[in-house]
Image (cartoon, rainbow, N blue to C red; front, top):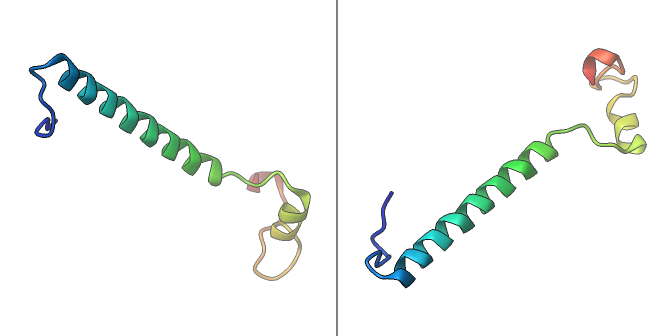
Length: 66
């Protein structure tokens, strides 16, 4: 891990470095959570009713597809 922009020889430099790592960690975990949530089937009958309707190029409404 590069620390070229931090003076880790001082307490404030180490603190800034640690704070930046923590900030990046939470940004990345938030982004992963948002990506996972966005791939779920919506809990909205008007949306799922359209997606799973019996029509050409639509997904059949079967338990296997949920």
